[in-house]
Amino acid sequence: MKTWIKGGRVYISGRMEETGLLLENGRIKGFCSNREPDQGDVVYDARGAYVVPGFVDIHTHGGAGVDVNGASREDFQRLGHFFASQGTTSWLCSILTDTCEQTLYTIREAVAHKKEHKNCANLAGIHLEGPFLSREYKGAMPEHLLRLPDVELVAEYQKAAEGNIRYITISPEVPGAAESIPAFKEMGIAVAMGHSGADYETAWKCIHNGAVSGTHVMNAMKLVHQHAPAIMGAVLESDIYCEAICDGRHLHPGTVRFLIKMKGMDRMVGITDSIMAAGLPDGNYKLGVNDVVVVDGDARLKDGTRAGSTLTTGQALKNVIAFTGKTLAQVLPMFTENPAKVIGLEHRIGSLEPGKDADVVILDSDYNVKDTFVKGHRIV
Image 1: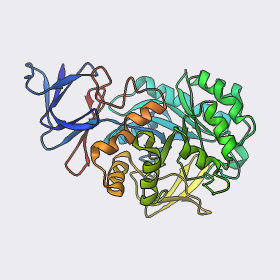
Image 2: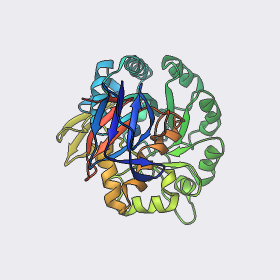
Image 3: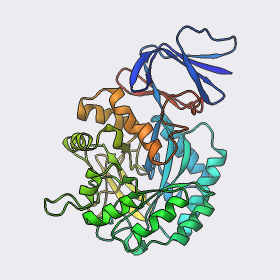
Image 4: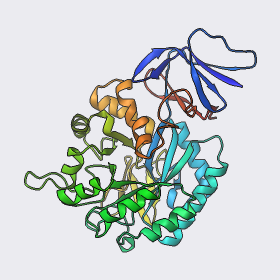
């Protein structure tokens, strides 16, 4: 059976075009302006709407009442359905620094969900945020569980994950961090630098060794000083990607504009860094081992430290458009092709090219998510 998405404005190669989109067998078959559906085909009326690639969130700790660190395969299913309702079609579950036992539990439950999931966003893999992180810039990380880089431990995690760990955040200044990057890359894991007060030279050593991005840049990170550019200076000067939490709290709108101007849109990655409170009212929640209080949508530990966000990808997209005055077509790469490139999945997801997964989001004229298709299946 084929699905024809007709009547909308389709995002193709950086611009919006008046055409249709044909989905078949879970893949994008091609574009269709004048062709007519066959009998029995499904036709989706996208008149007045935008037809864009599904969003890719490579850094999230939860939502809809589910905390990734304690999630069962059933919890992952519920979480994936919530994400799809917000326009996310592919995501990495971010495991906060935790005990080895709890980390292995979460990895196994995530993999079990990945094998059997349906009617939800595709869990593309796992992101380890720690435990090889700086104590000084730990943010919401439990300090007693932080440790020196251990390639054998990550290999154990990757074996349990059946190769599905795709991303890890490390702090460059932790002894052995830079030296461990080639081994992580050999395991198929992209390396990000974050939770760090590293000096400029140490950060560049990690970049030269293969680090590809900065984790939630300018948050839990030493900033630029004219005499000591530090990790932030290396992130800005280099060609690595920049994760950005665009909720208006973690980064001022002017800071978002500054980052885009410095890095270029092709090196910006919109993330949510969301916690289990995303999609829910203010109240008391968990983030791994931490107790979190959400007031006015702002998630913090009891000592006032920010602890993730309550952001969704759909809202983040709208925020960036509002912050920058840029068009939908200009902003979309932050949430689609760029994150796909960070984790090496751009051959499958991130754009509406024929042959790729049929991951499609329908946005109304105000950029709200109307419908989501994951591998050609309309999420209900």
